[in-house]
Image (cartoon, rainbow, N blue to C red; front, side):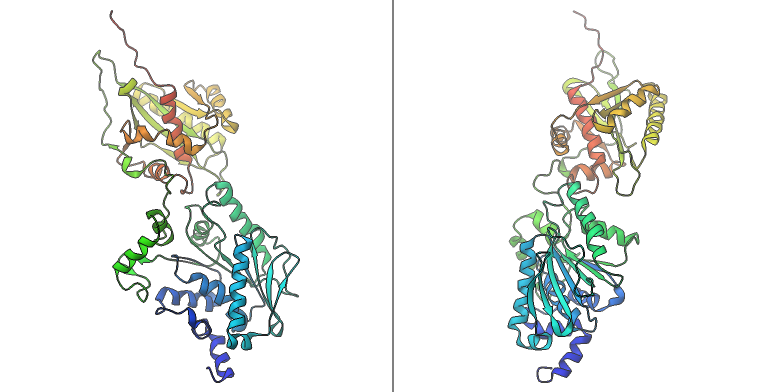
Amino acid sequence: MIRDRKVRVAIIKESHWHFFHFYFAHYVKYPTAQFQAEMFDLSENENAGNFFVVAFRGSGKSTILTTSYPIWAILGRQQKKFALILCQTQSQAKQHMMNLRQELENNATLKNDLGPFREESDEWGSSSLVFSQLNARITAASREQSIRGLRHNQHRPDLIICDDVEDMASTKTREGRNKTYQWLTAEVIPTGDRNTRLVIVGNLLHEDSLLMRIKEDVEKERIDGVFKEFPIIRGQEILWPGKYLSMEDIESEKRKAGNEFAWEREYMLHIVADEEQAIHREWIQFYDELPHGEKDCQGYDKHVEVRIGVDLAISKKDTADYTAMVPAMLYGDGKDLRVYILPQIVNRKMDFPETVDMCKAIDSSYFKENDKHPIFVIEDVAYQRSLPQQLQSEGIRKVKTTRPGNQDKRTRLILTAYAVKSGKILFPREGCEELINQIVHFGVEAHDDLADAFSNVVLSTMEDPPIIPRIWII
């Protein structure tokens, strides 16, 4: 291969694996792992179509798929004409372009086989490497730049590679996550053509991040493609045994990660809450049965009332929030107050009329069982303001409205933390799994509607606590 260009080109045209291990041999410091071989197979196999790779930090995913693959896709049998690399920031795009240029400039064999090339800056502000003999181009751009109408001569992008197009800041809010997904579906994908191949490389940063949405889209066959996840270890299997010879080596790498959150997120590919976690799982306390029939010293029933926290959504679209209802049984009052979360939780996509009907059914069922109507706790904000009015017009009188003021959702959840940790709020052993996940992983879960309804009902007991009616004898 070194001596004969015809032999060399014939081999590397057919195999990205051989291309990389010949031209990029200086990157191969450890025996290539099986999961990396899967990346090469995905890139070579055009029948696989789009593919999406999540792999641990330092796995070589960007070197293989963002630096090597676009060059091979042009030089190899795929004969791509316009490879577009997209990053989150312009500085990242420039770094990718610099990496490509350095490889082509400093690798004499690769330069002779692929060259000549020239670097250009176009009217979109993106940087490009143009290969005139092959009538091909590699362009790197950022999310900040417009890519509408990008063409190389008559060619629209036929290979689009997105590498780390989101970070912790962009995934922190649902608005930011929606914006990234909309950018991909409304700008990136339409930029290509019918034969365009989409490759996305990155980490799992959030339960509702771009890659997690794509994973769901692939599983539900809303988008064609293959989704692969490669953590540093899977069970007791080390995925890169050539680099990490033992679990001691894994532990050493873990210490370099800096903290447990970074390790779980960037190496194990677990989506975990960060240091700002509002409620920790170990704080959750459970009950096995409700204390029915308990009386205080004066013979009054300690069961005061049932309150139901409501978080309203009025759309049934796939991307919409859920309408959540979290019921709680209140026992005692003052410092003896205990809040027992009930398992009859509602978490569904409903329109407004369905929500009203659901509230009426719940009101009737609790009255039949306890001879007491529940109190619906609803925020007096935006479109939720109309629900209390509608319920009262339907004959449901026990409706309590709350005003969150300037408190955001995280702050309101944090205000419940002491009551959770001290055992004043108790959860059933079964039936509240999704609610517990949302409050423990608040900020990384795809939805937080149950957490909002939970905060609503718990904070109502603090702001307007129940009082057991007593006759005091003086």
